[in-house]
Image 1: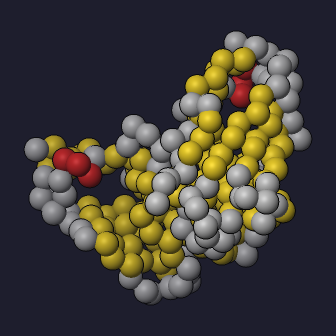
Image 2: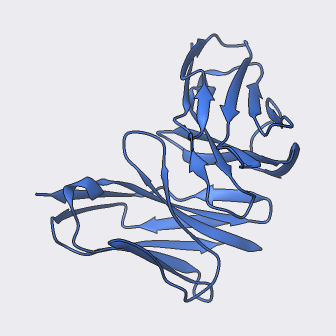
Length: 112
Length: 109
């Protein structure tokens, strides 16, 4: 089975812009969750989608949003980018919300 | 405040040693505890624990959860240099999930 894929792998944006990241889960997995990883804050949970519905949400501002499509692919959007949004954004897929989560390679976002 | 604490923060051992990594948590509405191994890339899933006292085992790695005392341990026996990594513990509760800061394990030849 192919693993979790994320596109793009690297991205450079300017403050104030917006960005959309994409995640394709492992075939058959219906849950996709998103995480932000920075050296200072470690790995932080953003949100989780299951069957196109947001199931769980971490403590991030409303500038961070996401959605999931009927084929379980998910996108994450960050609007009005700030320098502090520079991070590795990881998505993970699982069969359902209570299963082990398998991470993709991540998208490295740099905001200048 | 809900929190996940891993200890030690870092550990240096020699090949063949056995190590025990700890993860303690204080959360309400606990759902699950997950262990991950992270090298220079995305975390790799190791175990998911939901029930107390049931050991999960995979090769030289094993883990167990104590829901009464609110902690989990990850054991690695006969360590190898390839075990060098950051080991992350994550606890899911309610509609949130929190990761610990990780334990950086270095295994020397």
